[in-house]
Amino acid sequence: MTSLHLQVAPLQNPERYPLLAQALTDLAERWLGAARETVVVLIDDLPAARWYVAGQPVDRPAAQLQLCLPAGQASEGQKAEFIAHALKSLQRQLGRGEALAVGSGVIVREVLPQHWGRCETTAPQAQGVA
Image (cartoon, rainbow, N blue to C red; front, side, top):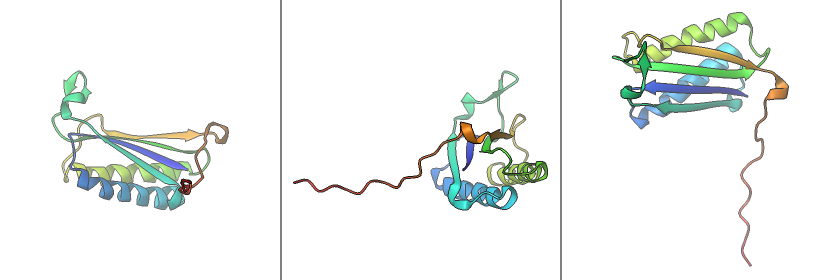
């Protein structure tokens, strides 16, 4: 499973979330070799007043993307390509071509298999009431 947690400021229009999730899923599939059906994307948006760099509030769009993937899933080159393309995509979508705030970035964390678990069951079937 590949997990991407995107935090953005300022607040975004919720209608943009599907586009962001789709773009991140596409990047994980293309550059990390992640199976599309195992890519999880979480998006949190924050008011700009809650995002600070060097003790000062950000003055333009900011993004922090944290990626967790199974250790050994991707090579160093694949991770570097993912980071570069993710930053470009976030800048294009959130910064609308302008630079994102200082401190924006991508963090890659590899997780050992014994430190990773996930639910693989489907939703339970509705039970009839007698």
